[in-house]
Length: 316
Image (tube, rainbow, N blue to C red; front, side, top):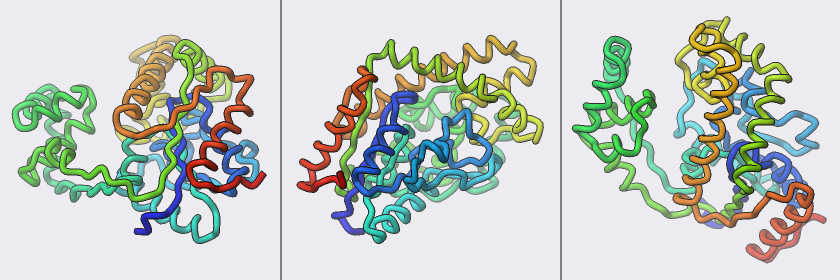
């Protein structure tokens, strides 16, 4: 792979304003945008994922949006391969690739020399999921604590998919998932400018709460009901924030007000986790977006940073 391929990466917590900033920068820098969001790949998940609209795109090509059905399996390895292909295609068109999103592991897998483990055998996976259906997650998590305590410490016990994935690796390879992760290299494969957007926490949380209200007004409940009525359950798509909470409402576990409040809380907690992850895992140039009225000034600052990093000029 060409070590000199230039890539702009724009990351940050949900609701911080990545969409607008990335589109304005892409216009200045003759760029095309690749979604770095693990949920926007799914068709029909539009409102709950804050998917960019055609009007918002303002003529800027966007990639890796609406490429899967909600019941399709899609892994981080799939994402890695597709994004790397898109980076090459965009560069061959004489454009600058932008990766924009908040799914840290997915973005990290593209930028660094990550090697993915082979998929677990179907028999192993089915056995573990069958045990989960019969006994719940506790026995599985206890097993993970025994065979891979480092992974057990890093994975929340209610994260069924990750608990099972870590056990799959151990059972099929004999290697602890945490040991495999430690073996991964930190070598960047691209000449990447990693730009992080952040803002005052209280303002961010207010924006998240307001965004959820707007999503509900825009028809999020109907969007989720459509998936629910299709019988789509247990897939990665409907485990995302904004979908799992409203599934609980349709299952009769909570009332609508409780579901919406849980959605807001989970979104705020996710934003906090995103920031922590980015700060610990990536070398980020941060820009503060607290003063929303000065967004054009911030876009200019970011553009100047890119120009300085690469000794280039934007298309303005």
